[in-house]
Image 1 (tube, helix red, strand yellow):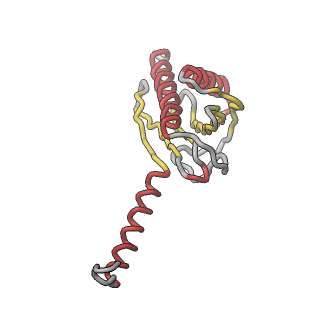
Image 2 (cartoon, rainbow, N blue to C red):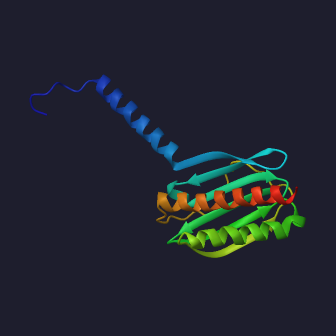
Image 3 (tube, rainbow, N blue to C red):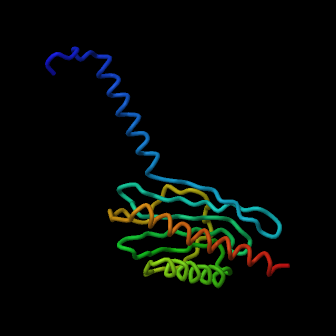
Length: 172
């Protein structure tokens, strides 16, 4: 620019550092992770919730926990155009009825908040791990908003919390 100071290598390094900081901040915003404590009759369990905003898997909510009533449980939901699909995976086949009931209650909560649900299934895997996973459901772009992802996460959290509390009171 006319009349401005000449650009130095320090300026270029500062711009490079600024770019890296912005890029790092954007990466942090791709995935949000939360551990939500749930009180059961005899202990406190953590419900791990992950909201994924990343471009290659935008529109996913994952939740997992290890609680007696359900055993190890992993919920993976994907939203596209206000339609939620997903899978509820348990580690113990004998908990099938409880997991199917939880799936139906999450579907009802999602419907109540304005989402359509399709292809919601249950499955079993004895070696299921709970916590945060690097494995993603789908690799397609869509237009799920942050608000939609938060509403889906809230529906899952509220329903699981209500059912864990209800299970604790029925076990007395």
